[in-house]
Length: 190
Image (cartoon, rainbow, N blue to C red):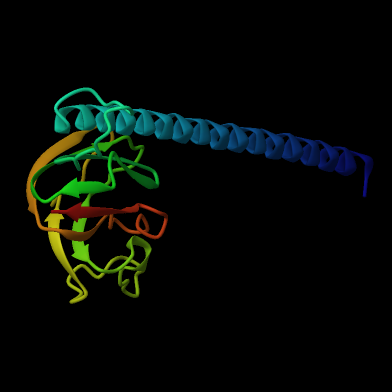
C-alpha cells in the first residue's frame, strides 16, 4: 500500500471511529434520558394514586383517614388508573359494588387504552392470541369496559360503570403493551 493510500485509510478509520463513538454517546444519552422520563412518570403516577386513595378513604368513611378510627375502611366507589410506558397503577385494589367512577390518566410517553374484564383469571393469565394480545371475546371473561379510543399522552378520561361483585382485570391491549406489564387486578365486593 502506498503512503498516500495508507494515510487516507488511517484518516478514514479515525473518522469512522469518531463517528461510532459519537453515535454510542448519543445512544447512551437518549437511553438514560428515556429512563429518567420513565422514572419521573412512575413517581408522578405513584403520587397521584396515593393522593386519590387518601381522598377516597376520607370521602368513603365520612372523614379523614385515620389509623386509630377502630373500624375497617369502606371499599371505595372510585378508582384512578395511572397508565405509563409500560405499567398501570390502580389507586385501590378493592371497590364497592354498584356505581363506580373510573378515572384514567395517561402519563405517556405513548398512547394507551384501557379495557376492563370480569373474569376468574389472574391478570397475567388472560387468554392471548397468536399476536400475544388479549383475545377480547374469549368466553372465560366478559368485557365490561373499553375506552374505545386511545388516550394520548398527558390526557385523562372519566367514565362511570356499574360493577357487580367479582374479580376484574384492567389492561392496555395496544400491540405489545399487555405483555410488557400493562395490566392490574381489582376486586369488587358487596
